Length: 129
Image (cartoon, rainbow, N blue to C red; front, side, top):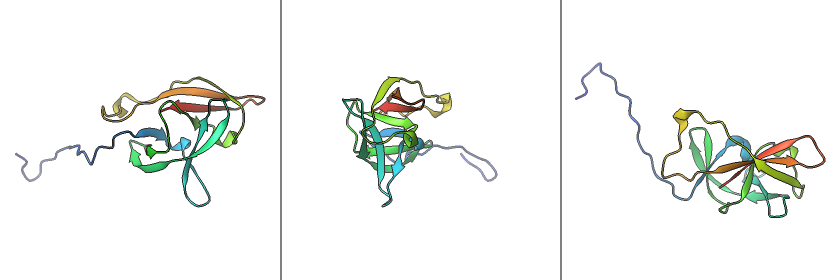
């Protein structure tokens, strides 16, 4: 029983989104028209622009509900340093995430890779939905 003057901490589930991917804000780009896009590393190890649908945030990450396919590699960090059709090399990358920000069991998890831009000293980090 909660009486006047007492406090309570509660977590409320606002909804469940199936088949969604959580991406950091650095992975989402905005076009001049305000549309959301991401850079994807294709089968030929080249950067491609992919339009995506973003449906809010969860613990500081964007909830992407459409536009990505299973197994695609998304550029997470360094998107400003790459351009479409640029050749890149994907390598493993481990994202740092505090223990208190665990992903709910109903959300999609991602494996991450690091992408190195050839003929340059810059790197772009990627994730696979």
